[in-house]
Image (cartoon, rainbow, N blue to C red; front, top):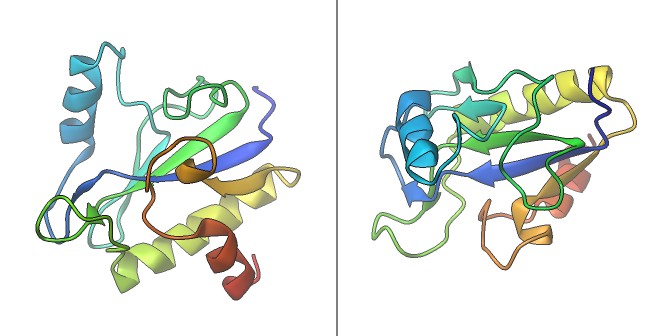
Length: 138
């Protein structure tokens, strides 16, 4: 099993309300030269949590941090214009994200939780993860 020290949250950078599946993200990532989806989990608009890569396989989601991290992505992250960063998480997505993070922290108690934007010049995941984590006291 890989040593996990970080859980990194992402968004798909798709417009608010646009359904996106693991198959969609897998196709995008394959077009970029990945072998499959780069994330370990994807959270759909209805809060359904889909598996991407197996946790024991290194992800392809955050340059320089993939070896020791789990990548979690929610569908959305852009306003309806498709350009402006926006926290588009539905109530179901937020609830599922909280539960998934709790489950991951049980399995990887030493892991810290971060937004992709802490490591890259991107808006992703379109919300301040540290503030949110402090608010929900995870």
